[in-house]
Amino acid sequence: MADLSELVDRMHPFATSVFGAMSARATERGAVNLGQGFPDTDGPAELKEIAAAAIADGSGNQYPPAHGTPDLRAAIAEHQARFYGLEVDPATDVVVTTGASEALAATVLALTSVGDEVIVFEPFFDLYPAIVAMAGATPVYVPLRAPAPGSGDGFSLDINALRNAITQRTRMIIVNSPHNPTGMVLSALELREIADLAIVNDLIVLSDEAYEHLTFDDVAHIPIATLSGMFERTVTVGSGGKCFSFTGWKIGWASGPTDLITAVRVVRQHLSYVSGGPFQPAIAAGLRLPDSYFVELAGGLASKRDLLSTGLREIGFEVLPTQGTYFITTDIRPLGATDGIEFCRDLVDRVGVAAIPNAELAADRDQLMPYVRWTFCKQPAVLNAALDRLTALRTIT
Image (cartoon, rainbow, N blue to C red; front, side, top):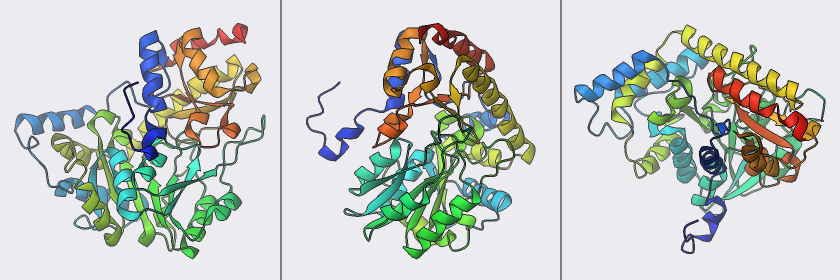
């Protein structure tokens, strides 16, 4: 690794990303990469045509407005009203960002200060503690409740652990549902419990809803901002990359009450300033696609989830239920393994498949050590190739 001696102390824990490291390792070994969550097929052709036209006619080749094009901000507002009944003013309550990641970072930087505490559920998307550290705030980790082995259950909210983690210094709770990496979707009751604690303690909620349209088996995604008393204290983040399978375009957004979004806009304009000019009209068109597009997107992913889940279960993994996202979580203990970090490190060399250990996405690794995350947003041929290689685990373990 390069010399990191000049890196400030608070950022040393985030010098490498498990996703980047595992993908690099997979590339070096020629492994099937079921670690990093990006689709291997493009989204709607009509959106590519709109982006290409914006480049060809020059309309997308210079800086767009700092907070996003008016049409995309309008489309985001329409989307929030259409799917969730949330009314936001596109002129004041929406900001377009360079991916959902920038929306998350700008929100934490804008709304927390040195000495504040930010609650992060674990396992977590690895960006969360890093951006809290950038802000000079302190992450406070609240473990999700792991299921009993063999129960058939998934991860769930531990409301008592959350309640006990809140102090006078707590400023924000980061909520992610549908949840990366576990694949759980917070229920209406769980969201209400979080909301009640946020209200009584006067906390801001940063709601990462990047996978909002990727839920399965009639499980509903409920934005926490729709709950009574929550809109005025919630910044909601969305992702064009996840909605339309164009992760490389890096178009995201944040929406919410005017006072919070105004603060986010101030910080955001000093990060990347503007985002993907030619892609903004394409994402605006995508958000206006008919309901059938979003239904078919989730349905196609559900079939891939089932393909990979069935195969992993036949090999011997315990497969936890996946209600949303791109990800399946498995318990490796039925295969005679207990250390997910070692298991994933060796898996690339042993059978040529990459996955992500959930323990790398937690401050307290012990509880999550037996769990491994796999992505299924790949072509069936790729999933089958991975399963063919993984069948060797039956005899190796």
